[in-house]
Image (cartoon, rainbow, N blue to C red; front, side, top):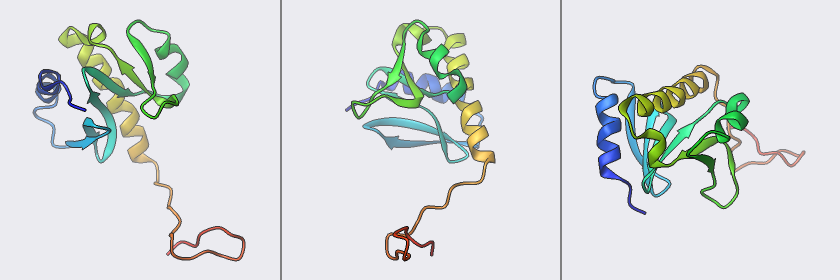
Length: 129
């Protein structure tokens, strides 16, 4: 799936002086990462934004917003915003700021260690290597 190059350029312009923001192709589109944590992205012509779990229900009720349902099942903590929702630069900045805030909170928490696929303990859980 292609992503909206014009929207990508608008986001790059907002983040232009930031060294802590990187780009990555993901979800068939383009994502922007804050300190390695996804904060926002583009899927088709929609803006994908990470939102705080405790604000999710209120955010989804807003205009031009729907839950991210990339796999067919809504993914809590991420929303799609249709183009009218970020038409102005100020509106785009508000959405990007929200996503960046969540990614920053996630980046300051210790990451969960994933269990190795190679070893399993007697309890059936995978051992950490």
